[in-house]
Length: 276
Image (cartoon, helix red, strand yellow):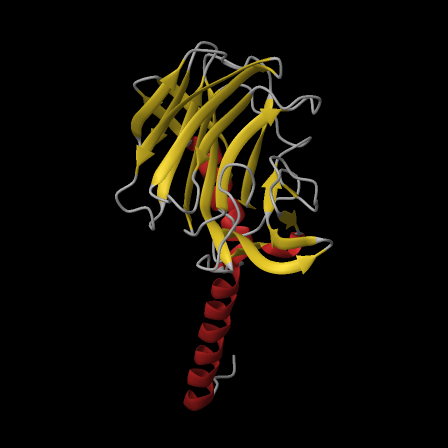
């Protein structure tokens, strides 16, 4: 066998090493989207949360690197509840850097003075009992009305309603947890208030819902429980930032726009013992 000159032999060894190393590097690279999907699926498959109220299996996790259109609908609508002033537009729903931003703007659009954002799981994801965790923060200012809530999936009525989180911009440190039940002729609301010491920061708002009771937590501390009118039907989840209306009133000259509600994540758990 003919021997190669020493210089050529060394060069060949270097080339082989670089080729092998390049191949290994290419094989180990995971695109950001693939990595996100892998991590999310791993969490969904493995996370079993054990609390004093039971065992909870994680069935959906949204970290808002992308908005899953199989789960969420971005609302385009000008017909609102309670005389609210906003037109919900797709352009006001922003997803980037692992965060959802629902942005309220002062602008004229289709006979509305304000625009804002809403997403919901209507006709896509039904929740019937379980645990919902949402981490968010929001902007202060008169007339702003951030909310996370549940309505019946049958689309034919607006009761029962569970408000996991509500606040109004002129009193931003105060958070409301509400259960609305009954019917329009015999209507009841049970609620509790909680004062946040650092309302400008992110906080986690949680609802636990079983056949007999609703429980609200803020930053993993139980703040309210209610056994009256507990919904017994599937519901869908709504996240929105409203502007104006009967409760918060209209914005004033001190309300700064754009305003926003920022959501870090949404987790939905199923109880091992209840639900369909």
